Length: 344
Ligand code: UDP
Ligand code: MG
Image (cartoon, rainbow, N blue to C red; front, side):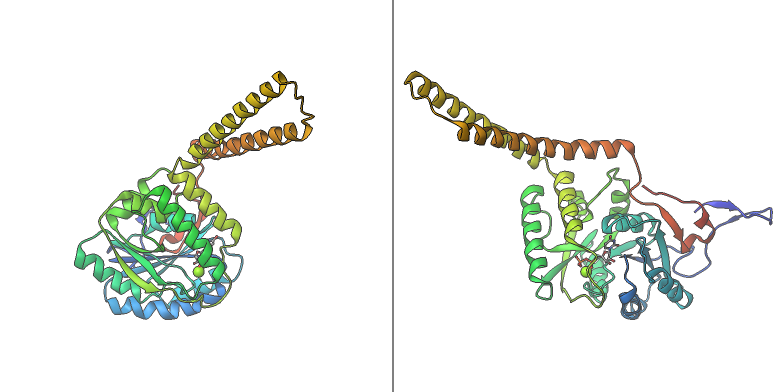
C-alpha cells in the first residue's frame, strides 16, 4: 500500500480504507469478477453472490473488474458499493479482454484465497463455498470448477468448446482439466506465482495447471446466462485459441516443418516425373500442373510464414513490455485514481 502525500494537509498518511474485509486485515477470500457491459446482470449477480459470501462468515472482498464497459455497469457497481462495503471496483481504461481483466483482478486481489467467477451467473456462486471447503479439507492450492453438464450452452458453444479442450489437452498435456474454464479457487501462493509470470496474453486456464500445484476439482452444473448476451464473439474465441496454442506449444511450428517436408517430397516427385517425361520425349503441355504446383507451394510457404509470424509477433510484444491493461480506478485505493497505473 503506498504512502501518499495528501494535498492541503501537509501530512503524509497511510492510504488504506478503514472498511472491514477490504482494509488492514487480509480477507480470507477475494472473488474476482470480470465484467464487460454486464449491466443486465449486475443486480442479479450481487443479489445471488452476497448471501453466499456472507454465509461463509469470514472476511472477504469482491473485486469487480470493469473491463472498460460502455454501458451502465460502472454506475450500477458504484451504487452497490454504497451498501456493500466488501465490494471493490477496479476499472480498466479500455476493454482489454476477459483474460487481461482476470489478470488485473489477480494482481490486485488481497485475499488468502482468490476465486475467479463469471458475472453472468453461469458459474453458480454457491459452488464457491464448496471450493473453499474442498481446498481446506484436501490441503490443495487450486480447486477447478469443472462443468459437469453443459446442456444449457448452445450447440455451437459446446462444439467449439469441445474442440478447444481436445486440442489443448493434446498439445499442452492432459494435466489441463477438461471443461474447466475460469471458475476456480486459488491459494495466495498460486496467485503470487501467476502474478510473477512475465508473459502477456496469458491464458489462465492453461497457466494455472502448468504450475503443477496440488489441485482438486469440484463439479458444477453450467447454468444459462442470467441476462444479456455473450461477450465472447467468434473473434474473441479465436484469439483465445491462438493465444492458448502459441503460448503453450510449439506444435504449430512443427506443423510448418511437416508441411515443408511434404512440399519438398512432392516437389522431388514432380521433378522425377518431369525428367522421365523429358527422357521419354513425352512433353506434357503442363500449364495446369505447373500452376497447381506453384500455387500449392506458395500456399504452404505463406502458411509457414504466417505461423512464424505469430511467434515473432509474440516475441515482439513481449520485448515491448507493453502492459495488457491500464487501471483507471480502484475503489480500494480511493485517491490513487488520478494516476493511471499498469500492473503489467
Ligand atoms: N468479459 C470481460 N471482457 C471481455 C469479454 C468478457 O471481462 O472482453 C467477461 C464477461 O463480462 C463475463 C466473463 O468475461 O463475466 C465471461 O464472458 P461471457 O459470459 O460473455 O462468455 P461465455 O460464457 O459466453 O463464454
Ligand atoms: Mg458466460
